[in-house]
Every structure is written in structure tokens, then in C-alpha cells.
Image (cartoon, rainbow, N blue to C red; front, side, top):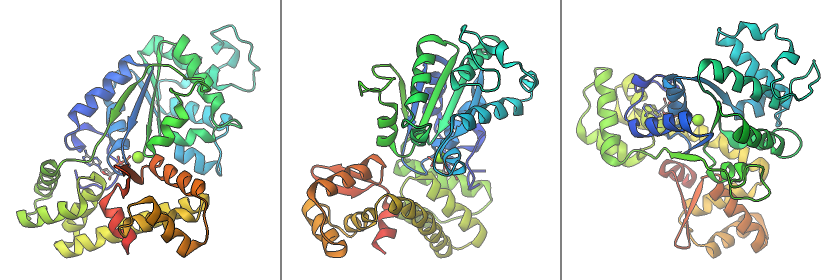
Length: 356
Ligand code: ADP
Ligand code: MG
């Protein structure tokens, strides 16, 4: 059902995205590394899960944000190794892993201590499984959080991935992320100090639906639940929510439950407000000025100088360098985009809510 508000995992549950699905599938089959980008709520996790289900080899889904939260702000190598083991055991076919002698997975002649398996050992094990069961893909959702892996900003994991890239042909990786700039920074393909510097990878972008598809999405969704909704209301909904599937689903679901356009819109905005409030709290932990900057932009201050005046009026002096750095971060976290010298909030519903 399209209006089911949970992330989808079967092909028939998602609307459109045929092209993206095929590109992602091709990435899983042929590339050592595939990067799936797109803003929040556009449908990355759903597309990733659906594609992993369609994938012929063995696909493992890991949510880096969840691991980060569960670890209280870090991802320890042992936890990641254990998570991968659990997923494999959950797949049923790999019961032999529970009693495995760790020495026996030593494929590259590297000496490993029996009690602790390193991430490299796991990658070698997976590559071995890939030989027997078809290709193995490790898919990290919200992978920008992997920068909290280990003590060196995720560098140890990247080194392992670089090793896999060069030496383990049956193991592939997918990274997705809503904070596109942070994800690119983490992977560091363009950064000579990154272990992955210079590697080739496939990139797939999930974009908001264009107008026509957004309307079609709502029409098909309403048809599924047997609701007749006037065209004029569908158009008005898309005016307010744009083509972001997460908001369209929320609206459709609420309309279905309440039977009223106004009620559905109200609940959708309410729910969006709650979600955004939580995300802002997360941002404010990094710097309290982020909210001020976002609010400045939302109320129509698009130029650097006007943003600075607003932030200083509300929050005291800030240096030019600091403001520039915070704006750059907001771009990297996909809250804000810069166009011909002007800053804009990317998601129009977020903009509306920030305006208050
Ligand atoms: P992201 O991972 O990009 O933040 P999700 O995959 O979590 O986005 O999707 C957000 C919401 O939108 C979920 O409720 C999901 O069910 C819905 N959704 C996203 N894309 C589609 C689609 N193509 N068809 C139907 N529902 C979708
Ligand atoms: Mg997601």
C-alpha cells in the first residue's frame, strides 16, 4: 500500500523509481562501491531495501544511524562485526557461523586472534560467501554516521573497504545518506588523504517527484484505499508538500483516516513539525546557531550579510569565518542549498514550518 507510512521493502509497494532501482541494482552487481544520495524522506531507505530484495546475491542492510545511536554516539568495531554476524545468522542459511572456528575463516593468511574477528576478517568471510552464493553486498544506510566508527573518524573502516575494493571481488558496498556532503566527505574519493582516494564508484540519486508524478502518486494511493478525492484537492496538496514521497504518504494516510483535506493537511504539518523539531535538537547539539541561521533563511533573508545581521541580533556576535563554516555545514547536511549567491531551504515544507 503506497500510503503505508513505514519504509517499504517490496517492489510492488513503491511507486515509480524503476530507473533508480535498475541503476542501483546494476551498482550492486557490477561496482565495488555504489553511493545512493537524496534528501530526507525522498525514499532512499525504501529504494535500498527493495533493491536488496531484488538483488540476486546476498544483500545485508545496516543502518549506521541506528548503530551510532545504540552505541551512545560511537560505532565500535566489535559492535559492527557482531551486527553483521547477527544479520547473517538471521538469514538462516548460515547457521554454520554460530560455531565457526574463527581461524578457519582466515582466507588471506593473516594471523587473527581466535577471540576477536576484525572487520577485515569479516570482509574476507563475506567475500568467501560471495564465491559460494553469488555476490555479497554490504549496504550502509545513513552511512555518513560511519565517521563515528572507531577512534579515527572512520578511517579504519575505509581502509578495510579500500582493501576489499582492491582484493575482494565478490564483496560490494552501498552507501546511502541524506546528508550528502557529509557522506561524500566521509567516503573521500576526492580527498588524497582518504584510503578510498581515486576509486571509481557508481552514484545514484533519488529526487523528489516532479509535479505530474506527485499527483499521480496521490491518485494511485487513493484508488488503492478506495477513496474518491477531487482533483483540485490533489493539486492543492502537491502545492503544499511538493514531490517528497515521505510527506505525500503522510498526507494520503491522514486523508484516508480522517476523510478530510483540511484535517489531513493539518496532521501532516503537525507530524512534520514534530519530526523537524527533533532534527533541529540534534543540530543544536552541534551548534545552537544552526536554528537561527535556518530561521533567517526561512523568513526570507537569503543573502549572507542579512543572515549574519539576523543571527547577531538574536544570538550575539559571530565571526565571518564561523558563519561561513556553519552555512557550509548546512549545505553539506542538505538543509540548505546555495544558488547564485543566495541561500534557500531545500524542502519547502521545512521552510514553512521554520517560518512558524
Ligand atoms: P529516506 O530514506 O530517503 O529518508 P524513506 O525511504 O524512509 O526515505 O521514505 C520516506 C517515506 O516515504 C516512507 O514512509 C516510505 O514509505 C515513503 N516512500 C518513499 N518513496 C516511496 C515510493 N516510491 N512509493 C511509495 N512510498 C514511498
Ligand atoms: Mg532513510
